[in-house]
Length: 274
Length: 304
Image (cartoon, rainbow over all chains, first blue to last red; front, top):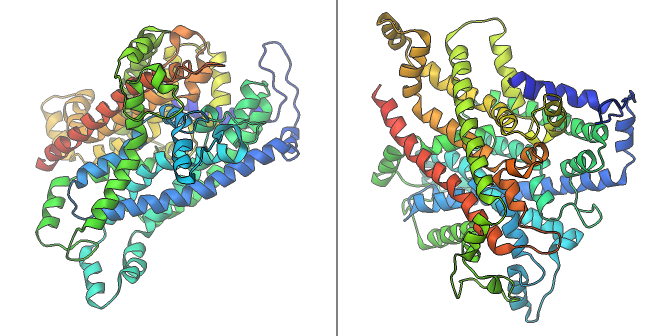
């Protein structure tokens, strides 16, 4: 069953991408070789989508990591209500993308949205930003909601790592006269290095697959300017029925992800901790 | 959520009590001997508040009458709390059907995944067969290929098998997506069950299946709880595959049902948020139940 639903589709993906594939039974699907792939490199919308995907990765991943590590640092030691805070920070992770996308769509609505209201208070005059209808603000909303939902995940990863840092080691370096930044740089961070690497790679893989939040908030608009690679592939496949072209885009992504995973397995091999 | 994330969740739930006790007594924290101060508490408050604020806002919105929701200045606390949104959400459209569909799909996916993953993990843990490790690593490798990436070939495959538009089709795909991680996790736990226990069980006349259901599965309860929780949440909130494979309104699942509140020209925000609350509650319940279960499972495991 696993072979049928996962392994076969992986093969089929590459297979389809070499044809000009038609969904209708009876229509013939000529073999077109690499032309779907060469088309990718000449499609300005793919370039936009690739740029947006890259931007999404570069912006959301480091912020999620820093905030997650920060929250984990706050909550690794004894603190009143520690378990409660831990649960609160993890809750966004278990809510669904659909729900989160709609909450943020409402918060960033142009009329009566909370975001505009808060900005108005700070600006001293009424602010009217139609967040989801413009390229940059639309992207920003997608980043903000993705970071909000993602922090809890890197938080729980870093928490597990920080809980495992030997406190005596930290204490010893402090006795030796090291100040806080030095303790962190030379004792704590090297200790959780494996986790940092794993979180980094997994977040990059996850972020490159961004789809649902884009599809549900901006829908890729205006004029496909906030599309990411997967939402663009989905549009090509299920709106324009260009299955082969979409499969070619998805195949390229699969290859990139595969390389990232090989990289990740190398790291995992080096440290058996996780 | 990806593999290591799931493992980390496991980790943070493992042996919570002794760890806390040890720290309280003598061991200094990461921040020195004075283990907490007001700054950290305030920062934790802010973090927690930001984490739940949008969700609390959603709950608040779900109780607001439509006049409040469409107000040009946002209303944080409902002035006239009402449950009309819940009534509208539940009875208007097919929302209750979607809820039942999602429940069926999620529970069926959990059952299929747990059964198949247990059998496979048992084989990986206890038997020798050709290419065992190769097959295992193939399973692991596919963890890296995310579900959205395969949607096109999966759609074509399901069309060929006449399984589009059916809940069974969804269950098959969801279970397949969840199998690799589940097998990976269960194998580790199954291998930890001492062989001697199994042998004494067999001496009493137990067959293989009985060994699995009466000995190994109960001892691996925490792992099975984790598998069940993640599988349930995956199936419960999955969006793209359900969107693509299901066409007929009566077979839609809950996440798709939520999108129906967004019309081309008007959006019924009130019912949408009421529906969102309804959709979120089962995830939270499953999360908290399984979390409690981990601890019990681990303590049972501790005795052995």
